[in-house]
Amino acid sequence: MKTTTEITRISKFLSLVLRHQPSTIGLALDANGWAIIGELLAKSNAAGIAIDLELLQHIVATNSKKRFAFDESMTKIRASQGHSIAIDLELRPTAPPEILYHGTAAANVQSIMTNGISKQSRTHVHLSTDQEIARTVGARHGKPFVFEVRAGEMSAAGYQFFLSENMVWLTEYVPTEFLPISADL
Image (cartoon, rainbow, N blue to C red; front, side):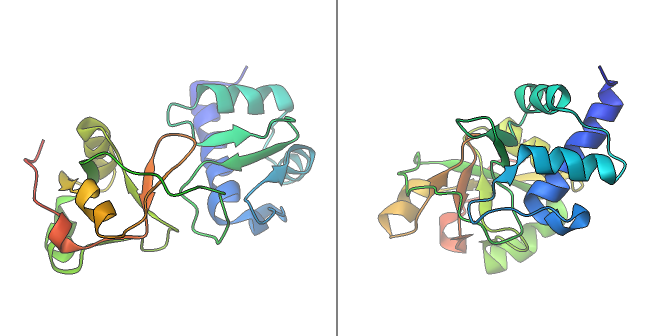
């Protein structure tokens, strides 16, 4: 088995080709973001990224964020969310909990308080039911700051929410009126 460092490197590579740039290795994703596993393995190996089915299964099973999923037949794989390319994850609108959290860098707070939370280059804004997860996400970009999102009120006002396979809450946009500031954890 590969080292933890090698597995992390391959997981990041999979995020790149399954979420953002499948063209990096000439991979084709279908309309729902699925890639044929045999094609993914062949094109990855041709690009110098050594992956076999056993390693791919290990990465999917052990990824702490559950970023990837196999289809029922175990012949296809896709990223669970976080895409910057247009795909249909076949998610259905779901009523969110009353409160969700969004982690960001403290440097972004003023802009968000003026403009709301936008999806930027992604297909959705990512939200969590867990403050600590939101804090960890924010810390990836600098000093973390956690926004409390009044998701229940947003939903009642007509905004749609979706729950990804890996339990990340998704929405198109969070207007400022639904952003009371939570304590910086």
